[in-house]
Figure 1 (cartoon, rainbow, N blue to C red):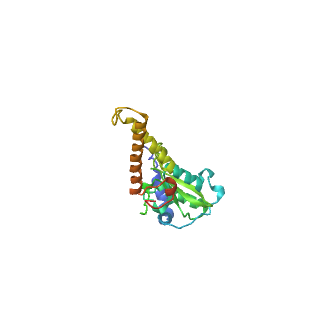
Figure 2: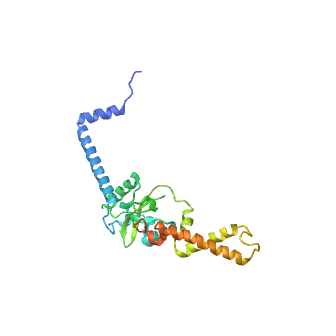
Figure 3: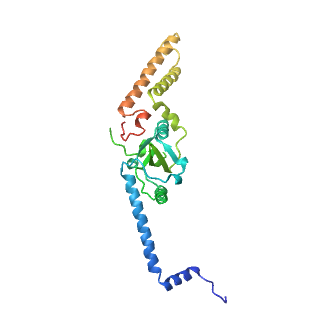
Length: 239
């Protein structure tokens, strides 16, 4: 072949060597990486700590209004799905790099250092003191929070159904009454008496209700369980 093909990488390397910018570029890249690493370490420490900060000075014109939520809205969701809304320092799961990157992007855009992070997640993802989809928030002020990042898998569509009995005592009593009724229907006719009567059915039903209610009460007290409104923002395991 008459002419040799041009290797652009070699040409770039020669140009760098010619103007003596190789060492300078290396130092600049190193400095950028060092600053970025320091920033990530600061963010990680802030997520693991508790600054007690109630707001961050965002530039509101730069915020996505669809990602702003009031504490009452967060509370409602946590109660419906039996989730907790706690300081990020209690979170024992692994924060994805994408979440860190979004924090850095927000800090750069708003020229601030974000603090006071909060996370919505199931109880099992928190380190709770003894007494399936995290969402990372930063406080704006006046009980408003900005959603920074969501990761993990979506919640099961049945989670709200399973959490419904634990919203309050009325719901729990209703579900116990229903289960007792269904169990009573499974009792064979004539098991306790030759004559099938309405009175016998309701006696068995009352017995079943007391038995199931006793198990539920024992389970609740033994494991320190409580209703959703009492635990949504509690840092205690047995709240």
